[in-house]
Length: 409
Image (tube, rainbow, N blue to C red; front, side, top):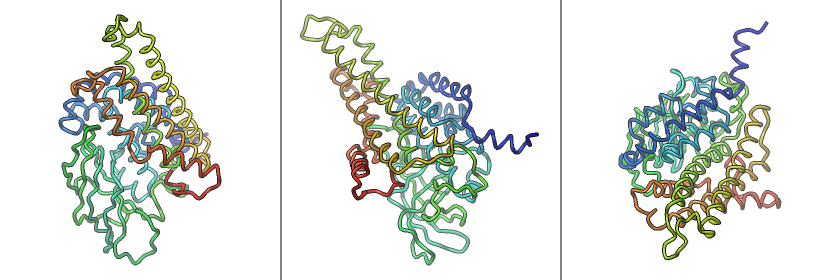
């Protein structure tokens, strides 16, 4: 006879069931009009509005990727990407916040027990953060004193905890080169209003500042015990995502929202082709133009291809999670290059659609302009730079010297 503890462990060892996952995707679709309606105000605030924030929390959209063992929804990566695509169709900035908080909270779920005990003491919570440029950590009795200023802290207004990168200052213990991570309540930080940008304005990606903040020993994760390392001896272990590599997961799921945003651009251009004329010609509506239909078809095909790559990659990662497997170094290099392929396809599609939409699409009050600006900025994230991804893969298959440690891709 199964014990209560065994049943609980078996439940936690699976992703959310399909009915739950489908409901999350449907909720994201239902919220699209709200996200779209609030997008302009969110851009002015440079952070999601209160209505949007309430919707994100009330519908568990910020806990979607968090494992069930911590009170999260526990979506598979496939279903999380399905949800993110729909959120982005309403407002890419909102999906970016959801991505960062879900991703960082998930990374925290892989941290040592001492971190999880504190951060998730009251159930599921929200974590965001930044690691570069790192702050400084100085060892004192019982813990650490943290000082630093971390820009690009997306989701700072919606998060309770910050995961911040630090280097150790005057530390006598064993040191592994690199950036360690510390966990600080946002109540101990100051948010400096620095997010003045042309794209992704509504993400609240301001600078979080720590000035002589004390954290207990258990809230520091040194390089030799980095969050994201697989440690089967932990008390907090057993979810499918507990065995996944951090960087491929965060990078690949982060591309889903870009596909969703450009799909929204495609919807706009497709709808306008019914009535917008091809100026200076006698063709009439653009749907009667072979040239326009050719370009529209190519744009749709490029997005279809990006989708195929995305769901192929997250499907592989889901399979690794469910079979307690491992992604090889070769697979990680391939994933990085296929991520680069998606980025190039998304970029080409967004630019093509702006050409098809015409110069009026560059009016700031046009939704397609907001999608384009948001996508244009997000494409440039350091993990998305195609040339680096291709070089990593090329060096891997040729047996050349690698330019980045496997954990970084």
